[in-house]
View 1 (tube, one colour):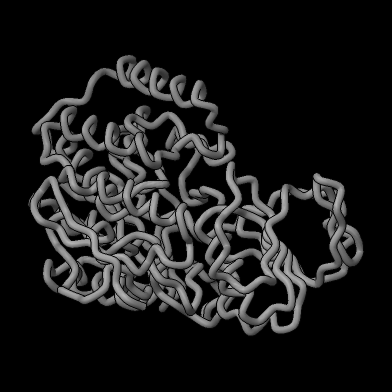
View 2 (cartoon, rainbow, N blue to C red):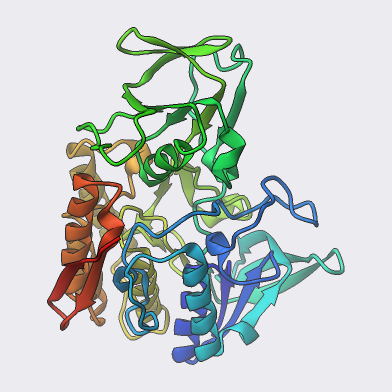
Length: 422
C-alpha cells in the first residue's frame, strides 16, 4: 500500500514514522528544504528565495506554552532538561532527533510542492507535485493520503470599519519576528489567544504603549508586565490615526498587530475530494480527521486547544488502524450520524463555526478516549490531560510566571510540579 504524506512538520514526520512502523510504502512531500514546518525560524516574512510564501509563523523569542512533557510524541520523550518550557529551537532539535531515530528523512522529498490531489475511478489518488529544483511537475499514484500541512500559515484578519482609512502599519502576527520593530510606537494588539497574550507582553519592552484588545471573560493579571500595557474591549472602528473601542474610548495608535488566528486552506485538494471548508469548519470528517466521503484520506491536526504532538500521533494511529484493515470503519451513514451528534453538542456549547474543531480543557480527554476505544489502540496516558489542566490554570493565574514551573512525570497517571526560582 502506497501512502502520501503532505508536509514535513511535526504531524507529517509522525505520519511517516507510523507508516513505516506499519510496513507501508510511504513518501512525504515538503516544499521547503528542511523538516520542522512552523518550528523553523526565519527572518524572512513574505517570500523565500524561490518566491514561495513563508510557511512559518515562528517569532524569535518564542517559548512553548506547554511543558515539554506534553510537547513530545508519546513514545519519544524529550531529552532530559532542567526546565519544562523550551525555546522553539529546542523543539526543532527534538524533531530532528525524532527523524534521525526512526529513519524518517529518507522518505521525504524536499523542495517538492504538492500542486494537486484528486481521486481516480479505482479509488486511488493522483498527486501532482512540482519539483522546485527542476521546476517540472511529476505525477504519483497513491492508495491513501495524509494531509499534514498544519494551520499556522494563512493569516485570518477580521474586518473593521476604518481599516482602509487607517494610515499606520497593519500586520498579522504571522509576520512578527522581533519586538524592536515597534520601538517607541503605540501598538494596538488584537486577540486574546496565545500569540496575543505573548506578543502584548513582549512588545511592551520596546513600545511606548500597548493597547491589548481582547474579549477574554476575565481581565488578565498583568502585575509583572510593564505598566504600559492597557487591556481594552473589542474594537468599534479605526480612524486615520487611532481606534475607538466598544466602551466609547479613543486612543491614538501607530500600528495594528492582528493576533487573530489563521485560515484553514487546502488549495491542492480538487473539488472531487468531497471536502468543504467554511470559516475553518472542515467537513465531513469522522472524528475530526477521516474524510467520510473518501476515507482513504485523512486530515491530521486541524483540532486546536489541545496537546498537539500527542494528538497527531493518536489521530494517525487511529487512521492507520482502519487503513491497514485491522479495524473496519462504520458505514458512511453511521459516520455522518456520529459527526452530526458531535457537532450538535458543540453548537449547543456555543462554539462558533471558526471554533468547530476546538477542544481545550475538559473536552480533549473525551476525544482521546473516543479515538482509542473506537480503533482499539493504545490510549494517551492519563497524566497528559491532568497536566494540561494544571498548566492552563497556572497560565490563567499569571501569564508572566507560568513557565517557571517544572513538571516531572511519576507514572502513567501522576506527575509532580515544582516552582523553579527565576
